[in-house]
Image 1: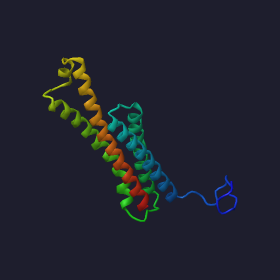
Image 2: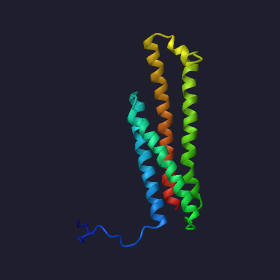
Image 3: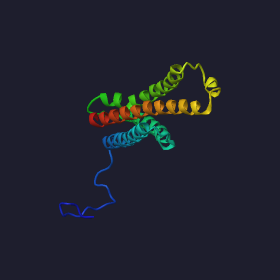
Image 4: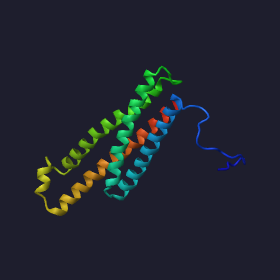
Amino acid sequence: MVLLSGKPREFGVLEQPVNHRDIALSGALVLAGFSGSVALLGAVRWYRGEASRVFWLGVRAGQVIAGAYALLAGVLYLSNDPPSSNLFYLYALLPVVIGFVAEQLRVISADHVLGSRDLDSAAEVGELPIPQQHEIVIAIVRREMGVMALAALVVCFLALRAWGTY
């Protein structure tokens, strides 16, 4: 492969071994890129009012990546190779907290949709005519998607901050 400079670029052997900084920065970019993509997909689907299985799988995968990055931050902490700022640890761990808080807000949002229609439980929704049931389900799913898309956007921001503080 020839770069824009005209010099060939060899692939294969690394010139220097991978260090902790490279791993932390790469992990942050993976988390930011994935979460940003999920947030964008969720925003588009939310705007269109469309349910999306891919979005929910992306949300769950993003939570797994955030957990793995938090574990990586713990390993980096124990390795005695500190980042340039201790804020890195905060930015690396907060995505897990954001995921937990978003799940709680998701539950509350479903209750809010039911409460706004003077319904106390999902059982009462089952007693309504089918078109009204579909309308309520779509409203709940749309609100839940909005909450989780915003959470993914916040995780993307935090991962970029972690990248900037290592």
